[in-house]
Length: 496
Image (cartoon, rainbow, N blue to C red; front, side):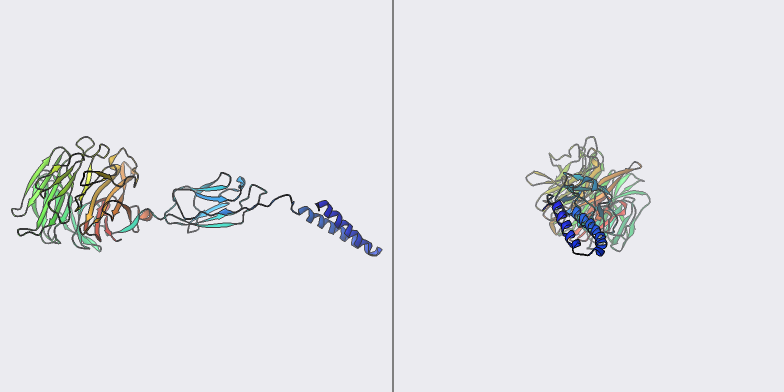
């Protein structure tokens, strides 16, 4: 029956009622009838038009974890009225209840996008309240809906803890001599000895201008390399009592940037020591003979100073070295030795590319594989066949790929008791403040011999462990006890 037909039937029924009453009651009933008719007309007028089909209007909350760099997408089952979409109808809040800054827009009619003003934090609990949203058809309202969301976990493992700072200056060398005791070398000369409880200076001379490295063969017998400004010579100092006293063991007319020591069990002597340094256009290798307490040296003018030297844990015969380079030739080179550092030869074909310029780190595994790190995010594995595998490609981005120093990997080392496990460290530039580049450190770990690498962070550091100082050197006592040192006096301890 149509709406008008329903009204006519209602009026006839009311007339029949009136005819059944006396004249005295007519006035009262007539007034009541007029009121009732008005109410009935209103009810009938508000009745839904049966020709209109009701729509289903719902929203689907995002599932899984959110990408911190992507918008939040809300999908509706019917086209949305654009005029109802605003920051008042799509309210995104963090775990504190504060709104997350951003903007909203309607896409493809049925999808509303919330675009954050900045990347969302990692592992964040978010809440999206959807209210006062209308469908385009009939302005059908959506019931108030709340979505509980979580952003993706941080792309790094928080496996490191920051130890007390021995100094505010850069640390360029480290030597972990027991599971929790080690020595660090400050760029401003002092050598510090310490544990997780703190550090104390054990060496400092006012006429030395810089320390480059520190290396202990045992917990008491150690060496440190400095530069003597009075004589303009590189110096290796020696201690046999854990740093209580130091004596000059050797000096040369170039800097000594790296000292490598080990213990080899032979009938004559157990000390193994090689060192390297030079100038921006000269690489110099130094080999120590314990029986005569003397050094022999070898130089190469095809490259810059020796930056790093490494031998596998149980092999003091076969070693690898990497050298620095400058923006104009010579660039960094790779050198190897097969006689314990008595002589070194360039490894042909592995000169640093023009955009890499310089090498900083070198490592050798027991299987003969070599690892080299350097400028412009350069990290490679050289297989025994000579094949090069590029490592960490695209792991992080550079602020300026035209500058090799904007992303640098400064060291690579493998654990002596399990060389499937190793680390690469370095830094990337984040900004320039008052003309001074600002850096944050980088750590990558492998547990499969260098095939795959996982980025790691520091517990308690800003940005979910991502922001910490530039890192320079790694020292590994065993696979579970590792130190990394860097700028600002940073000493990191491995705590997986």
